[in-house]
Image 1 (tube, rainbow, N blue to C red):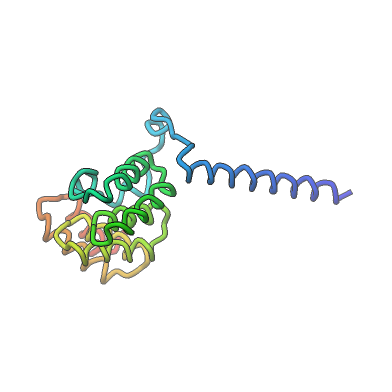
Image 2 (spheres, rainbow, N blue to C red; image 1 turned 90 degrees about the vertical axis):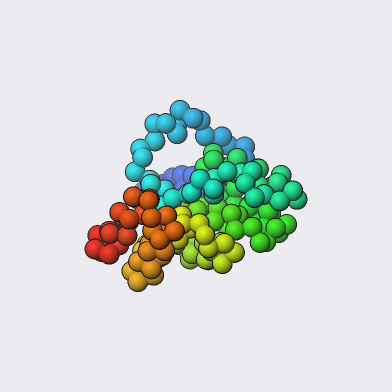
Length: 184
């Protein structure tokens, strides 16, 4: 008697896994497109509301070497469509051709933040900063990461560096005040 519900539940779980896996494969191949209407109706309470992509980080043509351009353009397109799994793959290809481009590491860090993969996000942003430490939003994102993993000291240190690099940015000062007060 109880065997039938267990069999039905097991079949439903298998079916769910098969459908989920197929959707994952289609998204990673870039075959699933998210509609603009869907994006407009999404609630704005999203993890990306807290971290920041600076303007220089978001322009695909800026500082892109000739040999990585096709990979970067494809990666940027997928990134803007929020197809992070596919974008990650293209950014990793771009790194193989140009491992000294800090923008690629910053983008990977942003993808890892979206996925709540904070250890990889931290490593990616630290590499980007090692290659170019003049971009404030990288320190801001690193502060967010350290705050998320519970390291208040490093969160504060990076928030201060972001604020020093871009003292006019109110968002950075506001974030620094919240980290200092421990309100996050």
